[in-house]
Image (cartoon, rainbow, N blue to C red; front, side, top):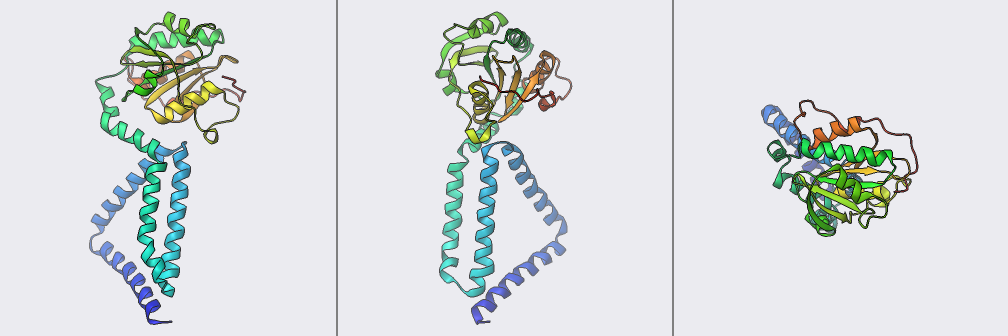
Length: 294
């Protein structure tokens, strides 16, 4: 073994020994550091669960693990100086590429931090919106009339609202039924509800990428998932083929809602006078797999 390889191996084992010495000297500090790091990583993975970001995280971690193995276990051992010199630039490149790849997830995170889900304690969509919304969705589902309705939460989806026809109307079951009635000029696209009012109709929602959704889902369900991935909104879908009620939140689509479970979910996610009990929105019993055409 040459001098360079011996020095690299000595540095590696010396670093490991130094780490364990610090743990022994300051166990509480190390424990707090590990808990903080673990909390951040867990929160990030939970926020990305079910989105394309989860696959990107696995890819980035794989790249970093392989590069670490190459540099520390091969390059350092055999004295590949050029690889050692290029490694910091490679890490910087991975970081910059990750910023571009995670721009949707980062934007959602910044919206949550900047505008704050905590604001829903004081500013929320109350029963004056939830009740007519549930009534309209129930009637549309019984008649098997397709519908796509998004309710903003902590952040406004201004670009989506601007893509449709501005209404600024009171939320009522009759108006929602009229908008989605077959033959209406606005029935094929989505409705945006925010600040307790119907802000716009005929809005174009972004479609989820094909790899993120079941191929059996139609355009309305794909649009619901797509919007929930890019904006902090609760999106309701009514299938015109089966009358099934579905809800999309943060890129997750749950099907098979009844008016009762839909009301509970909206109270939980949007706030309301009856919001005294935490209800997991994924608790609604899913419908059997069916092909949703819209």
